[in-house]
Image 1: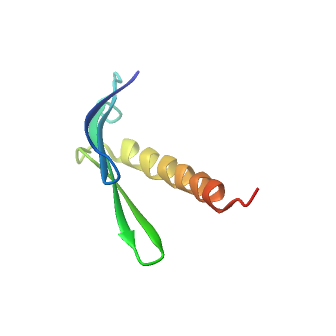
Image 2 (image 1 turned 45 degrees about the vertical axis):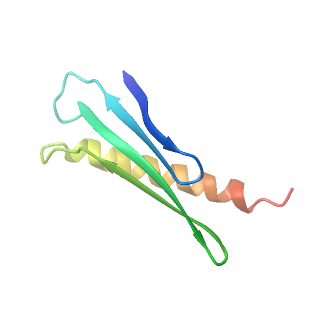
Length: 84
């Protein structure tokens, strides 16, 4: 089960929230924090995302997160570049 809680919001700058996934297998039982940071640039805005809290024995969870976030950002890029 996925459980999330917003920890802090700085409008136009940052969003911090928990990303907790309860699982019977410790390799997948994840308690983490996701941070999105927006930084203005000369040509727009730089978006940085960081997810912290992975334990050394959670390689499966880390691999799943990497794949999932890559898919998320690919879709986000498609949406942001649409002209319709």
